Structures are given as structure tokens and as C-alpha cells.
Length: 440
Image 1 (tube, rainbow, N blue to C red):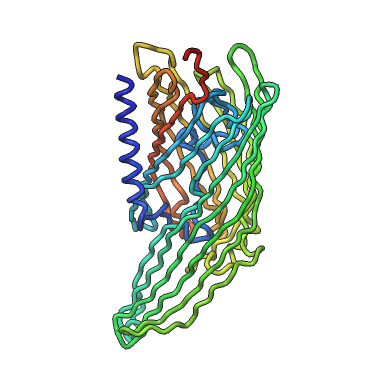
Image 2 (image 1 turned 135 degrees about the vertical axis):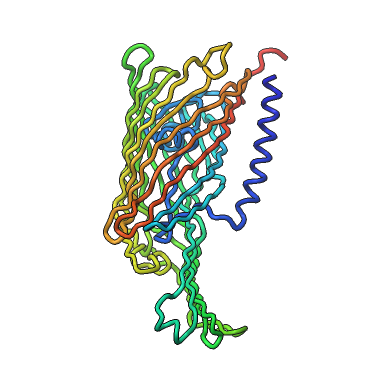
């Protein structure tokens, strides 16, 4: 029966990958009016396992799931096992500003990660995840009767698409069964397009098309520590620390402006500028966490993250600063996260749902920018569970489901309120690779 379920699971993974890859073409990685600034909305790190626990993971050590939020956590594993995680996300949003409402939904792949042991208490991991996404589309029409009387109707449209991804490779090692250290090398890469159009219905006037095409890449590093202390019985405490270095980004920015009339297009501006090494900078990030766990039955965690973007250069760099009347400015972001999980009875042979793991969490985030001097905040609740699919050598296989329900910003200070419900699913793949045959 288990083998039949695994075959169905593998077929489902193949079908979902095929559908999701085809859905990427021409689709937004994410959609938010606030992604007009800088490099867009920064994705919250972690697999569905982390996301359903409020985004925690800095102090988490669980051998059943991949936790790449702290590179030191890669050593929390069975020493003979190969592990992989593949995740998908579907996000639904409703926007509200002074009674005007609209909605949008996106569907995307959000990570693929693999990890396996190196030697004794050390392990290795490699993965690809989104770092930030740009997706917005604003449109309006000119309402000033004096202007319309002279020129006819005028429509304005601004839209943006693109993503920055991070590919990483890391390793960790544990000393004295308590102290773990880890490090990652991270490569950022991606493209962002931001376009603005002004169109006249009167063909005697020339329409305007302008925008920026950004290509970015950069390298940075992330370091992590974890210390686990037994408190009595099967209860233990884990303290975690991470630090990701800030980095100056390289690449180029293509800025253009065209005017169109009938079938004739004139170029007013077309510059391809290499980004100066200090023009655009990603902020550093410090993370602290503490968790308590009772064996493999329950765990609870609280994390704090701080990232300084005040020297990002987004406020003035062409293609990164916002379009329109509102003023965006880079600032320091803070994040407070808490999560809890419990497995009623992992070894129950009678009731399947007692072997499932249940999770809940909460978070409060400050964005890395301000709008007209006002901080943009997000808050939400998360819930999730893991459905185990086990056999002799693949006893940690499973499907993890999660939901993140929250709100970003408010309707005050000319802001647009986002309310969202994001559904995530990841496939936890586990196998024992390094088993020595006892019989020939």
C-alpha cells in the first residue's frame, strides 16, 4: 500500500512541476504595489516547514526536515541519509485604498534544496530559492478638464515584473554533540523590468514609453551557530545565531524613453550603464533565535532578525527609486517570529493522523523601506501540518502543507492595504543512501 502511495506521490510531483514551470512564463513572481521600490518584495526564507511555524528556523534542529535558514542546522540529520525539498506557493491578495478594491493571485515554485552527509558529523547542502520579486500594474486616466480639452483623453500605465534569485551552497559540522557551525556561499542573480506609458487618444500627439531594465548579480556569505543543551529528560534548549553579510551588487541598468506617433518611433534616451560597485547594496542581516523541544514530539521557537538597508542606494539609483508622487526611502527592517509544532504519537500504528505533525505560528515584520516617512508593517498567523509517507528506508518522506494569513500596511497615510492568504506545499524527500550490505 505504501509503495502505491509513493508512486502516486512521485507522479503528482512530476505533474505539479510540469504545470508550475509552464505557469512561470509571463507570470508574476509576486504581486504587490509596494514592489515598485528597490528590488521589490523580499521573500521570507524557509521551506513550508518554516513558513508554517511563523518563519522561524534560526534555532531549529530537526532531522526530519531541511532547515536552510541557519547553515549550522544542516547537521541535524541521520548520518546516512539524503534529503531534498521541493516547494510551491499560491498567493491570493486583496488590495484596499479609500474604498477602491482589487485582487490578484500568483502561483510559483519557491525552492529546491538538497542535502547529504560529508563525513561523520558534517553535512552539505545546495539549493535555489527566490530572494525578491517585482510585480505591479497601475493604470489611471487624466481627469483635469483643462488638459483633456486641449489634448483629448490621456491614459497612464505603470507595470513591473522580474525576480532576484539566490543560489547557495553550504556546509556545517557539529562538535561534542552540542555545538554546530555552518557557512554558506550565496550568489544573487536576476532581472527586473519597470515600465511607464502615457498614451493619447488624439493621434496628433505623441505617446510616451519609458522605463528601466535591470540586470543584477552579486556574491555574499552567511554564517551560523547553534548550541544545544539538555535540560532534563528528553527536553532540550537550542540557541541559534546567523549573520549574512551585506554586499555591493554588480550588473547594468538600461534606461530608455521613446515617443510614438502612428507607426513612427523616436528614441529620446537609451543608455546602458554599468552599475558602479557602490551604487546598489543589499543589506546585512543578523538573526537570533531560541527554541525548546521535547524529543521529536514538540518544539517551540522565537526568532528576531534585523537587516540594515540604509546604504542600499535605492533612493537615488535610476531604475530602483519609486515612480510617482509617494516617496520611498530605505531603512532598517526588523522581524519578530514565533512558532510551535506537535506530533501526538509518531509511532501510532492505528491512527494515521496521530502520526501527523501540526504547526502554528505568528510574525510581525517591518519592511526595508518607508513610504512618505511611514514604516510599512506586516503581521500574520501561520498554520500547517506534515502528512508522513513512510517505508523502511524512506521513513521521513512526507508532504508539508501550510497557510499564511496576514495583512501588510493600512489604509492610513495614503497607503494601500494588502490582505493575503498564501498556501504552500513542499515535498519532503528522504532516503538512506550509504547502507553497507551485510550479505552478498
